[in-house]
Length: 399
Image (cartoon, rainbow, N blue to C red; front, side, top):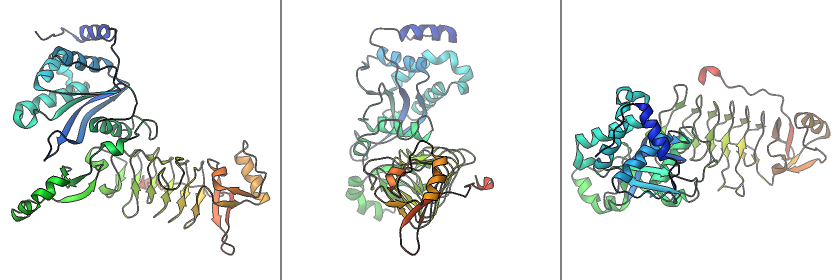
Protein backbone atom coordinates (compact mmCIF):
# COMPACT_ATOMS: atom_id res chain seq x y z
CA UNK A 1 0.00 0.00 0.00
CA UNK A 2 1.37 3.42 -0.95
CA UNK A 3 2.18 5.78 1.88
CA UNK A 4 0.45 9.17 1.93
CA UNK A 5 0.73 12.14 4.26
CA UNK A 6 -2.02 14.39 5.55
CA UNK A 7 0.12 17.55 5.41
CA UNK A 8 3.62 18.91 4.72
CA UNK A 9 4.66 18.70 8.37
CA UNK A 10 3.96 14.97 8.48
CA UNK A 11 5.98 14.55 5.26
CA UNK A 12 8.85 16.51 6.80
CA UNK A 13 8.84 14.60 10.09
CA UNK A 14 8.76 11.21 8.35
CA UNK A 15 11.66 11.90 6.02
CA UNK A 16 13.76 13.65 8.66
CA UNK A 17 13.61 10.37 10.57
CA UNK A 18 14.20 8.37 7.40
CA UNK A 19 17.47 10.27 6.80
CA UNK A 20 18.72 9.20 10.25
CA UNK A 21 18.65 5.50 9.39
CA UNK A 22 21.93 3.60 9.53
CA UNK A 23 23.71 3.67 6.19
CA UNK A 24 21.62 6.48 4.74
CA UNK A 25 23.53 9.28 3.03
CA UNK A 26 22.31 12.57 1.64
CA UNK A 27 23.28 13.09 -2.00
CA UNK A 28 25.51 16.01 -2.91
CA UNK A 29 23.42 16.45 -6.05
CA UNK A 30 20.45 14.73 -7.66
CA UNK A 31 17.81 15.10 -10.33
CA UNK A 32 15.52 13.42 -12.83
CA UNK A 33 17.07 12.94 -16.27
CA UNK A 34 15.34 12.29 -19.55
CA UNK A 35 17.80 10.28 -21.62
CA UNK A 36 18.33 9.89 -25.35
CA UNK A 37 19.31 6.32 -26.24
CA UNK A 38 21.31 5.06 -29.17
CA UNK A 39 19.43 4.31 -32.39
CA UNK A 40 21.57 1.20 -32.97
CA UNK A 41 22.31 0.29 -29.35
CA UNK A 42 19.40 1.20 -27.08
CA UNK A 43 21.49 0.48 -23.98
CA UNK A 44 23.83 3.31 -24.92
CA UNK A 45 22.95 6.69 -23.40
CA UNK A 46 23.78 9.57 -25.73
CA UNK A 47 22.45 12.55 -23.78
CA UNK A 48 20.72 13.40 -20.49
CA UNK A 49 18.40 16.40 -20.04
CA UNK A 50 17.45 17.75 -16.60
CA UNK A 51 14.48 19.98 -15.85
CA UNK A 52 15.60 20.51 -12.24
CA UNK A 53 18.98 19.89 -10.62
CA UNK A 54 19.59 19.99 -6.88
CA UNK A 55 22.93 20.74 -5.26
CA UNK A 56 23.34 20.47 -1.49
CA UNK A 57 19.62 21.15 -1.12
CA UNK A 58 16.14 19.54 -1.16
CA UNK A 59 17.32 16.64 1.02
CA UNK A 60 13.78 15.65 1.96
CA UNK A 61 12.82 15.36 -1.71
CA UNK A 62 15.86 13.18 -2.31
CA UNK A 63 14.86 11.01 0.65
CA UNK A 64 11.33 10.62 -0.77
CA UNK A 65 12.68 9.48 -4.15
CA UNK A 66 15.04 7.02 -2.45
CA UNK A 67 12.18 5.72 -0.27
CA UNK A 68 10.04 5.20 -3.38
CA UNK A 69 12.86 3.29 -5.08
CA UNK A 70 13.34 1.05 -2.06
CA UNK A 71 9.60 0.33 -1.83
CA UNK A 72 9.80 -0.78 -5.46
CA UNK A 73 12.56 -3.24 -4.52
CA UNK A 74 15.43 -1.12 -5.88
CA UNK A 75 18.52 -1.41 -3.69
CA UNK A 76 20.15 2.03 -3.45
CA UNK A 77 23.94 1.79 -3.13
CA UNK A 78 24.92 4.57 -0.71
CA UNK A 79 28.53 3.37 -0.81
CA UNK A 80 28.91 4.27 -4.49
CA UNK A 81 29.99 7.74 -5.61
CA UNK A 82 26.99 7.87 -7.95
CA UNK A 83 23.78 5.90 -8.32
CA UNK A 84 21.54 5.85 -11.40
CA UNK A 85 18.15 4.11 -11.30
CA UNK A 86 15.34 3.72 -13.81
CA UNK A 87 12.41 6.01 -13.01
CA UNK A 88 9.69 3.57 -14.01
CA UNK A 89 5.94 4.25 -14.02
CA UNK A 90 5.74 2.20 -10.81
CA UNK A 91 8.39 4.30 -9.04
CA UNK A 92 6.83 7.52 -10.34
CA UNK A 93 3.41 6.49 -9.01
CA UNK A 94 4.87 5.60 -5.62
CA UNK A 95 6.76 8.90 -5.39
CA UNK A 96 3.71 10.90 -6.50
CA UNK A 97 1.73 9.52 -3.56
CA UNK A 98 4.46 10.71 -1.22
CA UNK A 99 4.50 14.20 -2.75
CA UNK A 100 0.71 14.53 -3.07
CA UNK A 101 0.51 17.03 -0.17
CA UNK A 102 2.39 19.55 -2.34
CA UNK A 103 0.38 19.22 -5.56
CA UNK A 104 -1.93 22.17 -4.80
CA UNK A 105 1.13 24.45 -4.79
CA UNK A 106 3.13 22.52 -7.36
CA UNK A 107 4.85 25.57 -8.91
CA UNK A 108 6.55 26.23 -5.57
CA UNK A 109 8.02 22.73 -5.48
CA UNK A 110 10.16 22.18 -8.57
CA UNK A 111 10.97 18.53 -7.88
CA UNK A 112 7.27 17.78 -7.53
CA UNK A 113 6.53 19.69 -10.74
CA UNK A 114 9.27 17.69 -12.48
CA UNK A 115 7.84 14.38 -11.27
CA UNK A 116 4.36 15.46 -12.39
CA UNK A 117 5.72 16.16 -15.90
CA UNK A 118 7.20 12.65 -15.99
CA UNK A 119 3.82 11.17 -15.01
CA UNK A 120 2.14 13.18 -17.78
CA UNK A 121 4.70 11.84 -20.27
CA UNK A 122 3.88 8.27 -19.21
CA UNK A 123 0.16 8.94 -19.56
CA UNK A 124 0.63 10.59 -22.95
CA UNK A 125 2.64 7.75 -24.53
CA UNK A 126 3.79 4.97 -22.22
CA UNK A 127 5.43 2.89 -24.96
CA UNK A 128 7.54 5.85 -26.13
CA UNK A 129 8.50 7.15 -22.67
CA UNK A 130 8.67 4.06 -20.45
CA UNK A 131 12.48 3.76 -20.63
CA UNK A 132 13.27 7.46 -20.96
CA UNK A 133 13.72 8.59 -17.34
CA UNK A 134 16.40 8.11 -14.70
CA UNK A 135 16.83 9.13 -11.08
CA UNK A 136 20.43 10.23 -10.68
CA UNK A 137 22.19 10.70 -7.33
CA UNK A 138 25.75 11.88 -6.69
CA UNK A 139 26.77 10.86 -3.17
CA UNK A 140 30.32 12.18 -3.54
CA UNK A 141 32.08 14.58 -5.87
CA UNK A 142 34.19 11.98 -7.64
CA UNK A 143 35.16 11.03 -11.19
CA UNK A 144 31.86 10.56 -13.09
CA UNK A 145 31.24 7.09 -14.46
CA UNK A 146 28.00 7.53 -16.40
CA UNK A 147 26.68 9.89 -19.06
CA UNK A 148 23.89 10.86 -16.65
CA UNK A 149 26.41 11.86 -13.97
CA UNK A 150 28.53 13.88 -16.41
CA UNK A 151 25.49 15.81 -17.60
CA UNK A 152 24.35 16.47 -14.03
CA UNK A 153 27.74 18.05 -13.31
CA UNK A 154 27.65 20.06 -16.55
CA UNK A 155 24.24 21.39 -15.52
CA UNK A 156 25.58 22.39 -12.10
CA UNK A 157 28.22 24.55 -13.78
CA UNK A 158 26.00 26.02 -16.49
CA UNK A 159 23.23 26.86 -14.01
CA UNK A 160 25.72 28.61 -11.74
CA UNK A 161 25.24 26.23 -8.82
CA UNK A 162 28.98 25.55 -8.76
CA UNK A 163 31.87 27.49 -10.26
CA UNK A 164 34.06 26.07 -13.03
CA UNK A 165 37.03 24.03 -11.76
CA UNK A 166 35.34 23.32 -8.41
CA UNK A 167 33.86 19.88 -9.16
CA UNK A 168 35.54 16.71 -10.40
CA UNK A 169 35.16 16.17 -14.14
CA UNK A 170 38.17 13.92 -14.63
CA UNK A 171 37.41 11.35 -17.30
CA UNK A 172 34.18 13.06 -18.40
CA UNK A 173 35.42 13.39 -21.98
CA UNK A 174 35.96 9.64 -22.16
CA UNK A 175 32.51 8.85 -20.75
CA UNK A 176 30.56 10.88 -23.31
CA UNK A 177 29.97 9.33 -26.75
CA UNK A 178 30.90 11.21 -29.91
CA UNK A 179 27.65 11.75 -31.80
CA UNK A 180 26.06 13.74 -34.60
CA UNK A 181 23.83 16.54 -33.33
CA UNK A 182 20.81 17.65 -35.33
CA UNK A 183 19.36 21.14 -35.44
CA UNK A 184 16.70 19.87 -33.01
CA UNK A 185 19.36 18.78 -30.48
CA UNK A 186 18.80 15.09 -31.22
CA UNK A 187 21.99 13.01 -30.86
CA UNK A 188 22.50 10.29 -33.46
CA UNK A 189 25.00 7.46 -33.36
CA UNK A 190 27.49 7.86 -36.20
CA UNK A 191 27.51 4.12 -36.86
CA UNK A 192 23.72 4.15 -37.29
CA UNK A 193 24.00 7.09 -39.70
CA UNK A 194 26.55 5.22 -41.82
CA UNK A 195 24.45 2.06 -41.92
CA UNK A 196 21.31 3.97 -42.94
CA UNK A 197 22.84 6.73 -45.07
CA UNK A 198 21.55 5.47 -48.42
CA UNK A 199 17.93 4.95 -47.38
CA UNK A 200 17.81 8.19 -45.38
CA UNK A 201 19.02 10.17 -48.39
CA UNK A 202 16.85 8.37 -50.95
CA UNK A 203 13.74 8.93 -48.81
CA UNK A 204 14.69 12.57 -48.24
CA UNK A 205 14.97 11.98 -44.50
CA UNK A 206 18.66 12.62 -43.91
CA UNK A 207 18.86 14.75 -40.73
CA UNK A 208 20.18 18.30 -40.60
CA UNK A 209 23.48 17.76 -38.78
CA UNK A 210 24.95 20.89 -37.18
CA UNK A 211 27.93 19.32 -35.41
CA UNK A 212 29.71 16.11 -34.44
CA UNK A 213 30.88 16.35 -30.85
CA UNK A 214 30.68 14.83 -27.40
CA UNK A 215 29.02 17.93 -25.98
CA UNK A 216 25.79 19.62 -27.03
CA UNK A 217 25.37 23.36 -27.19
CA UNK A 218 24.76 25.39 -24.05
CA UNK A 219 21.55 26.91 -25.43
CA UNK A 220 20.12 23.46 -26.15
CA UNK A 221 19.86 22.92 -22.39
CA UNK A 222 20.11 26.25 -20.56
CA UNK A 223 17.94 29.39 -20.59
CA UNK A 224 20.29 32.36 -20.01
CA UNK A 225 19.54 35.49 -18.01
CA UNK A 226 17.60 38.30 -19.69
CA UNK A 227 20.72 40.49 -19.93
CA UNK A 228 22.87 37.75 -21.49
CA UNK A 229 23.43 37.59 -25.24
CA UNK A 230 24.83 34.64 -27.20
CA UNK A 231 24.79 35.56 -30.87
CA UNK A 232 25.76 32.13 -32.20
CA UNK A 233 24.63 28.98 -30.37
CA UNK A 234 27.67 27.05 -31.60
CA UNK A 235 29.99 29.34 -29.65
CA UNK A 236 29.16 28.04 -26.16
CA UNK A 237 29.47 24.40 -25.13
CA UNK A 238 27.24 22.79 -22.54
CA UNK A 239 29.03 22.90 -19.20
CA UNK A 240 30.19 26.49 -19.69
CA UNK A 241 29.44 29.14 -17.07
CA UNK A 242 27.86 32.20 -18.68
CA UNK A 243 27.26 34.78 -15.97
CA UNK A 244 24.38 37.24 -16.38
CA UNK A 245 25.47 40.26 -18.39
CA UNK A 246 27.93 38.31 -20.54
CA UNK A 247 27.89 38.92 -24.30
CA UNK A 248 29.29 36.23 -26.61
CA UNK A 249 29.80 37.60 -30.08
CA UNK A 250 29.95 35.57 -33.32
CA UNK A 251 33.20 34.99 -35.20
CA UNK A 252 36.17 33.94 -33.09
CA UNK A 253 34.34 33.84 -29.75
CA UNK A 254 34.04 30.55 -27.87
CA UNK A 255 33.50 29.31 -24.30
CA UNK A 256 34.42 25.71 -23.53
CA UNK A 257 32.97 23.43 -20.85
CA UNK A 258 34.25 23.85 -17.26
CA UNK A 259 35.16 27.44 -18.13
CA UNK A 260 33.38 30.76 -18.30
CA UNK A 261 32.66 34.12 -16.76
CA UNK A 262 32.05 35.27 -13.18
CA UNK A 263 30.38 38.56 -14.11
CA UNK A 264 29.32 40.55 -17.13
CA UNK A 265 32.08 40.02 -19.73
CA UNK A 266 32.48 40.86 -23.42
CA UNK A 267 33.66 37.69 -25.17
CA UNK A 268 34.97 38.05 -28.72
CA UNK A 269 37.81 35.55 -28.29
CA UNK A 270 38.47 32.04 -26.99
CA UNK A 271 37.81 31.08 -23.37
CA UNK A 272 39.39 27.63 -23.29
CA UNK A 273 38.73 24.76 -20.88
CA UNK A 274 39.27 25.64 -17.19
CA UNK A 275 39.63 29.37 -17.93
CA UNK A 276 37.67 31.79 -15.73
CA UNK A 277 37.20 35.46 -16.70
CA UNK A 278 36.26 38.09 -14.12
CA UNK A 279 33.55 40.74 -14.15
CA UNK A 280 33.92 43.70 -16.46
CA UNK A 281 36.68 42.18 -18.59
CA UNK A 282 36.89 42.32 -22.38
CA UNK A 283 38.25 39.38 -24.36
CA UNK A 284 39.00 41.05 -27.69
CA UNK A 285 38.33 39.73 -31.17
CA UNK A 286 40.38 36.60 -31.85
CA UNK A 287 42.12 36.75 -28.46
CA UNK A 288 42.93 33.35 -27.00
CA UNK A 289 43.20 32.40 -23.34
CA UNK A 290 45.00 29.10 -23.14
CA UNK A 291 43.36 26.17 -21.40
CA UNK A 292 44.94 23.37 -19.41
CA UNK A 293 45.51 21.33 -22.57
CA UNK A 294 47.06 24.06 -24.70
CA UNK A 295 50.36 25.29 -23.34
CA UNK A 296 49.86 26.12 -19.67
CA UNK A 297 51.50 22.94 -18.31
CA UNK A 298 48.22 22.06 -16.65
CA UNK A 299 47.99 25.35 -14.76
CA UNK A 300 44.46 26.80 -15.10
CA UNK A 301 44.31 30.46 -16.10
CA UNK A 302 42.13 33.01 -14.33
CA UNK A 303 41.61 36.51 -15.71
CA UNK A 304 40.75 39.11 -13.07
CA UNK A 305 38.18 41.88 -13.11
CA UNK A 306 38.26 44.76 -15.61
CA UNK A 307 41.00 43.33 -17.82
CA UNK A 308 41.44 43.90 -21.55
CA UNK A 309 42.88 41.22 -23.79
CA UNK A 310 43.59 42.89 -27.12
CA UNK A 311 42.55 41.48 -30.45
CA UNK A 312 44.50 38.36 -31.49
CA UNK A 313 46.51 38.31 -28.26
CA UNK A 314 47.43 35.06 -26.49
CA UNK A 315 47.36 34.82 -22.71
CA UNK A 316 48.79 31.76 -21.01
CA UNK A 317 49.28 33.03 -17.45
CA UNK A 318 46.82 34.18 -14.76
CA UNK A 319 46.11 37.91 -14.57
CA UNK A 320 44.94 39.91 -11.58
CA UNK A 321 42.54 42.84 -11.81
CA UNK A 322 42.88 45.81 -14.18
CA UNK A 323 45.41 44.20 -16.54
CA UNK A 324 45.94 44.76 -20.26
CA UNK A 325 47.52 42.52 -22.88
CA UNK A 326 48.09 44.51 -26.05
CA UNK A 327 46.70 43.32 -29.36
CA UNK A 328 48.70 40.73 -31.24
CA UNK A 329 51.19 39.73 -28.54
CA UNK A 330 51.64 36.42 -26.69
CA UNK A 331 52.21 36.30 -22.94
CA UNK A 332 53.08 32.69 -22.16
CA UNK A 333 54.50 31.08 -19.03
CA UNK A 334 58.09 31.31 -20.25
CA UNK A 335 57.83 34.71 -21.96
CA UNK A 336 60.63 37.04 -20.75
CA UNK A 337 59.14 40.34 -19.56
CA UNK A 338 61.16 43.51 -18.97
CA UNK A 339 60.02 46.01 -16.31
CA UNK A 340 61.88 49.30 -15.85
CA UNK A 341 62.80 50.59 -12.40
CA UNK A 342 60.20 53.37 -12.51
CA UNK A 343 57.43 50.97 -13.51
CA UNK A 344 58.50 48.46 -10.86
CA UNK A 345 58.03 51.18 -8.27
CA UNK A 346 54.49 51.89 -9.50
CA UNK A 347 53.58 48.20 -9.66
CA UNK A 348 54.91 47.59 -6.15
CA UNK A 349 52.27 49.98 -4.82
CA UNK A 350 49.56 47.97 -6.57
CA UNK A 351 51.04 44.63 -5.44
CA UNK A 352 52.66 45.25 -2.01
CA UNK A 353 53.19 41.54 -1.33
CA UNK A 354 55.32 40.99 -4.46
CA UNK A 355 59.00 41.98 -4.47
CA UNK A 356 59.97 43.67 -7.73
CA UNK A 357 63.73 43.18 -7.45
CA UNK A 358 64.70 42.26 -11.02
CA UNK A 359 64.45 43.76 -14.49
CA UNK A 360 63.54 40.54 -16.31
CA UNK A 361 60.85 38.08 -15.21
CA UNK A 362 59.25 35.01 -16.66
CA UNK A 363 55.60 35.88 -17.24
CA UNK A 364 54.48 33.07 -14.93
CA UNK A 365 56.34 34.80 -12.06
CA UNK A 366 54.01 37.78 -12.58
CA UNK A 367 50.90 35.59 -12.67
CA UNK A 368 47.94 36.95 -10.72
CA UNK A 369 49.38 40.43 -10.15
CA UNK A 370 47.17 43.50 -10.55
CA UNK A 371 47.52 46.47 -12.87
CA UNK A 372 49.97 45.00 -15.40
CA UNK A 373 50.02 46.32 -18.96
CA UNK A 374 51.89 43.96 -21.29
CA UNK A 375 53.30 45.56 -24.42
CA UNK A 376 55.83 44.76 -27.14
CA UNK A 377 58.61 47.18 -27.99
CA UNK A 378 58.11 47.87 -31.69
CA UNK A 379 61.85 48.38 -32.26
CA UNK A 380 63.37 45.50 -30.30
CA UNK A 381 60.44 43.08 -30.12
CA UNK A 382 60.93 42.77 -26.35
CA UNK A 383 57.83 42.15 -24.21
CA UNK A 384 57.55 44.74 -21.45
CA UNK A 385 55.21 45.35 -18.54
CA UNK A 386 54.22 48.63 -16.97
CA UNK A 387 51.56 49.92 -14.63
CA UNK A 388 48.23 50.13 -16.44
CA UNK A 389 46.86 53.66 -16.74
CA UNK A 390 43.58 52.75 -18.44
CA UNK A 391 40.33 51.99 -16.67
CA UNK A 392 38.60 49.13 -18.48
CA UNK A 393 34.86 49.73 -18.44
CA UNK A 394 32.32 47.88 -20.56
CA UNK A 395 29.50 49.72 -22.29
CA UNK A 396 26.59 49.26 -19.85
CA UNK A 397 24.08 49.62 -22.67
CA UNK A 398 25.46 46.43 -24.24
CA UNK A 399 25.47 44.35 -21.06
